[in-house]
Image 1: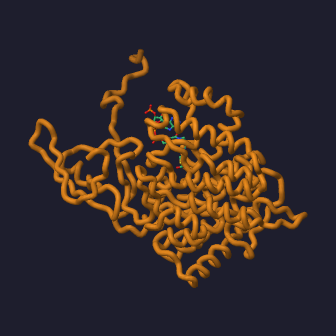
Image 2: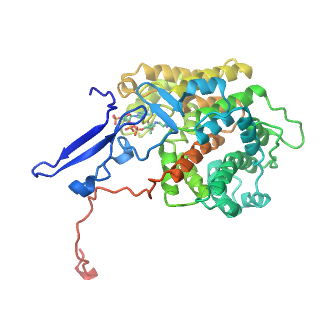
Image 3: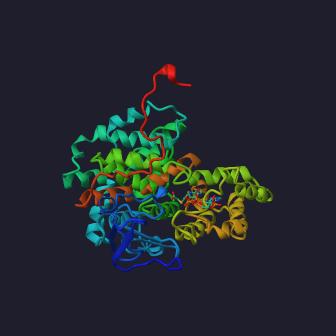
Length: 438
Ligand code: CMC
């Protein structure tokens, strides 16, 4: 096989050594990408489970939404290459595509956009909910809490078996999460909340709610709005990553969509996942200057240090992350548009990338920059505080989470997610009286 993926159908026969027991397992082919062995009858036939911590070789569901070829550096949303969508589409059009499977015609596009824009306001009582948080709360903590609390405010759309309820909840989530994220920032900075305005597009509205203040007129820069829209497109979905799998697992129990998306936000927060964009900036700040790069790289390579080159490496991409390529280009464009000629952070990032890509440690492990390596530099240049980076990722990924949640609920083969385990604890034993214990 030489690492090439196998795409055929048929059966795989497994035999248990030392017995005459065998199992014939169906091999199922997808549209593209490797086939999967259907192991659903494995336990019944051979009395064994499969073992795959981290799920690196396990397909947990069937999906028609997003495809990644990690070796070739390919990312497709509903079959369309991310490069084409980044160049020609908009975030809301991509949202429609992810949710519905096809690109909208002009009328469908207009109706969808109007539907999202008209749902951006929050129930007014959610305002007071923010006051329960400390002023220095991390925006991801606020986002997670307030999105979870949406199920307490929008009772009228919680029946997951009703397609109309699911549709309304999807709109509410996609439309209101940016408002919650922007208000999390306003709350921590002590500025008044800025209400969404229907005169703006999605990314424009987010910039307006983040940066406008009542005392001055705020002009949304079209260049920054387009850059933010692009960043949202690049983060919109990424097949069965940790947070999406969390949403699916939570949703498999029948939990309401607001609770499921709150679970996804919690999962995204970790530095190995969506928290990496914030961690990259912290890392660049700690390195401080290009002359400290060799020392930092040595620390990353030291197995005892636990340090990682943040924004590098990916479970699936073993080649350049296609999103990182677009992000790197956008980074230069945005800085040029903002008139930032020499950004020390960008210079440091470029040099760090150059050093890593010439170092055998990273080359041999196929570690390349991922989407988060450059996104933080753009967001910082646009004026977003570092603590907001992961919240912006969550805004974008809400579309992917909702699409995957909807697909799961509508899948007739959907069952509660319930992995098994390889148990290595104590075998059954009798409870000893206290006096008999050593
Ligand atoms: N810096 C240094 N070494 C690394 C890194 C890194 N960023 N990533 C992986 N390695 C090493 C790792 O130590 C291991 O080495 P060895 O074989 O000697 O033990 C080898 O590469 C394989 O790593 P792994 O941990 O088995 O890989 P994984 O697939 O479990 O982890 C990852 C993927 C993304 C969690 C990891 O590469 C990482 O922690 N990267 C930094 C965090 C980051 O940028 N995350 C954003 C991912 S993209 C956006 C998103 O999905 O949210």
